[in-house]
Image (cartoon, rainbow, N blue to C red; front, side, top):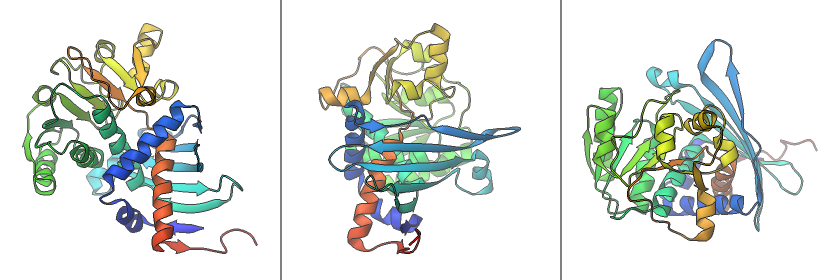
Length: 329
């Protein structure tokens, strides 16, 4: 059993944006081909506590070299105010031949970067009429920070970021980091609608539990990366062109898309999955008049694709702590 801590995982993934996007693309394609097993994730919640949760995501990723494993990820939003990270995670990879555990790695970096890579891949797959020179972000946490890095990797012409967060000080700090790390012009705005209207590419990554944005302020042809899944109102969902990662998975757990399905009694408003689009071709220009809404539930096979990349590279470089006597003799 190989143990990989946060420092090793981060070292192995730093600067690998293109490779991570490729791994996520591979996972989406295998999923679209029916070469995966992705059971419904299980949400562990606690009495008298609606915010905190721990989620289990088991999965099997097929292809020439299958990967098997599980992610166990905790989301405790109250950690942020205490100066701790909101999310923490562990990923376990098993042998597809014997079922025995091969590796346990710290999973928060894998989780945030596969999420960011899926958003960047959607942006590249659903291009607008013009190159991406600016993006608006709503929510100034780890996920949007990673999304900006991945967007910059797939859209090197990106130069401007417009930022909104309910915590104005946090938004200002986020803007300073963006300017320093990404060499972009970063500006903070006073309300969400101003951010929505600023650019035809928007990333929503908040901790909102109920819908609060109707998307009316968006420009025609805007792509909204709805990563946090619960920001957009029912009306906003139904007015949009909806792309998801998996219909069955996203239509649960009170996501905005799930609430819209309950409201209309069907799922016909979902136009396609990202995997279906990728099977047909690398790019699909989006509707120039309507908002396109990408709502990825976050499939466990994405974690496996990136974690497998980490494990292979760690073995090549001799990183991690090996426990040869972890299993019974």
